[in-house]
Image (cartoon, rainbow, N blue to C red; front, side, top):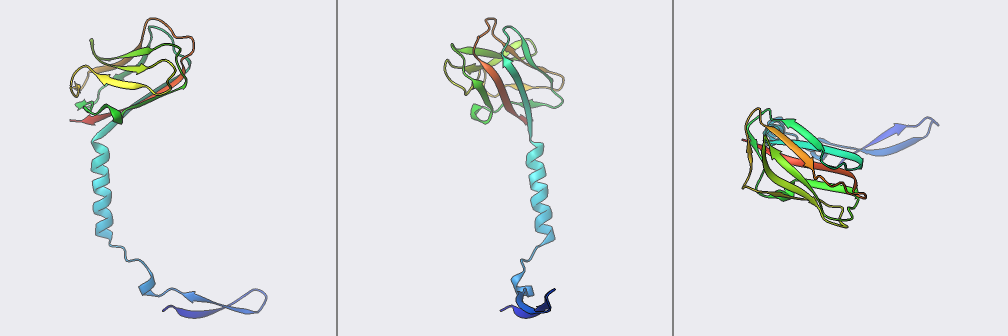
Length: 158
């Protein structure tokens, strides 16, 4: 049980409050904290995010993202870890193509009336090497309603 301590107040009256004892304080083991921080750092080092956005209407036939890979990495087979959103939905399906160098590796599709984009890969877990160029390119025909899109793609380092 905590000890009771009397503390003088500014007005000269005394009030009492419980003073925490050693048993009331949490015990922190510095080695556990360091191990937890190191495992978190290792987990963060395994991932790399490529994010982008297009404010306003999405132009037709335009490169929206251009990224040079600084590590060997790959896109996970589970496409749900990458996300895309639009503030204003497209009036018809709008497809962005995903490229590794000169090879199309997948798509990001905003279906008509939907504000969530769907990623798909043409191969299982597309891999990138140091120096490869990743691009996102919009379709040739501009949509007059699709606007304010943003995406976040999660890559894993090899």
